[in-house]
Amino acid sequence: MDSSPKPNNNDAYQHLFVMRHGDRIDNFEPLWVSTAARPWDPPLVEDGMIRAFRTGQRIRSQIGFPIHRVFVSPFLRCIQTASEVVSALSAVSVDPNAMSSKDVPSVDTSKLKVAIEYGLCEMLNAVAIRRELAPKDGNFDFRVSDLEAMFPEGMVDHDVDMVYKEMPEWEESVEGCRERYVNVVKALADKYPTENLLLVTHGEGVGTTFSKFYRDTTVYEVDYCAYVELRREVSSKDGSVETGEYEVVLSHGQAGIRFSHDHVSDEPVISRTPV
Image 1 (cartoon, rainbow, N blue to C red):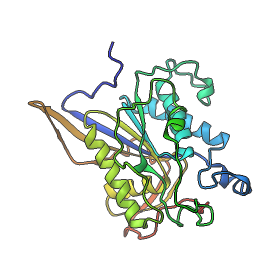
Image 2: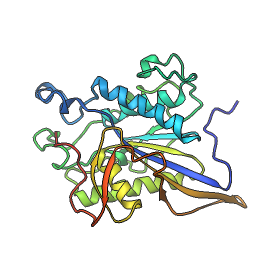
Image 3: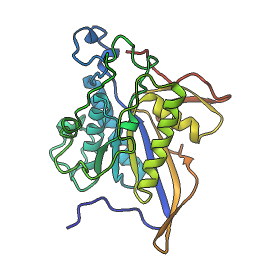
């Protein structure tokens, strides 16, 4: 039996969710960085795990269509967020009282596939990561195989090629980072035009995506686990796929993004102080 994700129906929509990670430990325990081996790569607190799982449950209950693929930044907080969301999306039975992946006895690994994408990583500059906490040699040292092991066995798609084969160089510009986020969203969507995608990234990635496709807006704040939902028409004809323009879907609520219809700000969309 084929366990790969199933494509959408012809003459339908492709849906994309771009989501921020959950609550990170250094924003709740300021002394954590003083003893951390990787102070640039904080994990989630327990409430962050719960928020991520419950967000996955909410997405599953609201959207009425499947998520086929999840792409995730290599930062630990994003990996942990994606792991919780994936558990909620692929749980064999839906328990409304479940609070985290610990409450999910079994998942259907054929529901969706997961892959790490360097292009979804945090802004690699002092706006997002305090310079004294960043690795001195600029090597963020992500062990992809260890991160992939945090997902259920059989759910990681090892055949996926990253859009960004290497991490951006420290110290990238804010504008360059914004371009990176938009590029990777478009590239992943174009790579899998008949599949629905969830991209787990950072606050700037969510805010940039929202302001890019919801024109003439200024994003002021992006909450933990906030997300922007995009869709575009997709049709298949004579073996080829044709796609329409992206639109932002607001019918499921704002989902934690606060913005105004105003001039577009030049300030980075950071909803927290740098770590």
